Length: 54
Image (cartoon, rainbow, N blue to C red; front, side, top):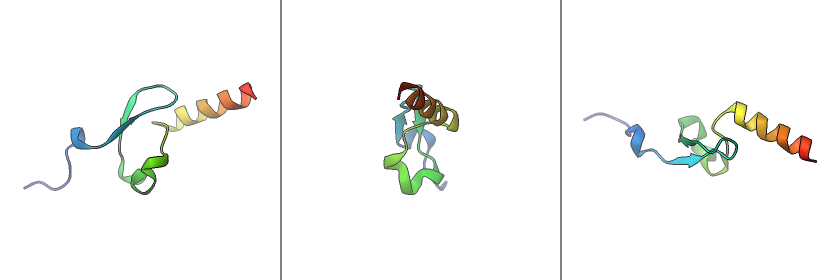
């Protein structure tokens, strides 16, 4: 019997910047509730939008 969980069975969220779905990653295990962005690029774009809008 294989170990682990199939990719399609992992929890997923929608990225706040690009609105694309992204799946849970092991490195996000402790902080999954606070993860909002699928990548560093999306996180940086959100920061840029916030700075320019203020």
